[in-house]
Image 1 (cartoon, one colour):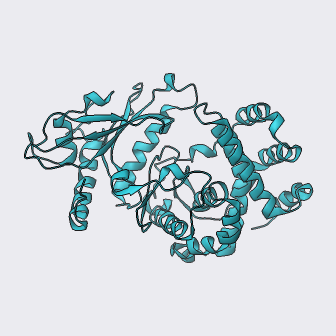
Image 2 (cartoon, one colour):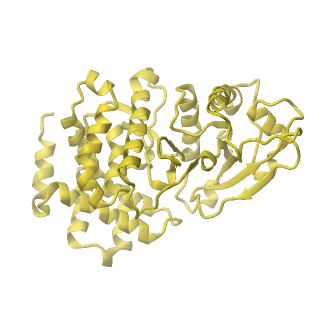
Image 3 (cartoon, helix red, strand yellow):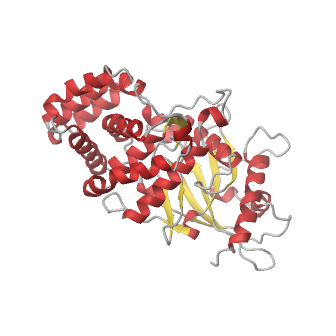
Length: 389
């Protein structure tokens, strides 16, 4: 389909934010969100309301195409329709959360409620790093139904990489700059000064059971040093988190390649799937990209330059006296903590075991690159814990 001109897209974006505020969330009594449990529930009238179009302007039928093999926590559908006058509408993505009882114990309704809340905040902040959210509903107490009606990123942008491919310098610089934009605009004391949103990143929740299951599951594929590293980081995790120096900002929490959509010319990027977002250190997102999802050779060659670019791209770092050395220190902390993130992800049975194990070993390799001498790692962590900064 032909994309709108840039000016039209900007005008549409402004309207989308207004519609999101008026219709998306249940606190607006005048415009309660419709209940959508399946793709067939999306009618022309719902699309007209969500897109701010006149009644009767969307023609039947609304076409619905399931997108299989993409979501592990939801059902995804591409929706398309035409105007009565023959004009095209933007393709949309309908995301319906899998109810907790169908999600084999990994997913909880809090994930979907968090994503809905984050989209609301991103709309209020006029964020450019997320797709437009036209409509959302569900999340009431005892209601297992959650849905989002989103801009289809794949129309104007494309997922570029798999877990094993090199990003390339240009794409990484675009990604790091977009990440910095999110963290710059999302400093907690600026957008949530009352502290009303108690959002801890959901993948940072320590879970000893996940770790023990992970070690048992892969017992014959973990080296003794990897098992020792798991136990060591788990023992020190709360203290390590207390040493993070970064100002608290809104972070994505799950920036893997399938959640990142680049424009065809790699000049811009959008992030999807905000279930794990929360208040945290921007270095956590940067560590995910550089240490888990960037091949080791690229990380070794480009890592420090990309970290400097990220630090420069958040001007408030200077105002908060957060130096590059502080950022580099925090990346070391999250390099260790990422060793624990993979056991938690491994508890999702829909993720391939080989992928989780490969990422875990990549996290361990990053620790090895940073600390060099694993037998002394315990002493190095203890010295870090004694650091008065």
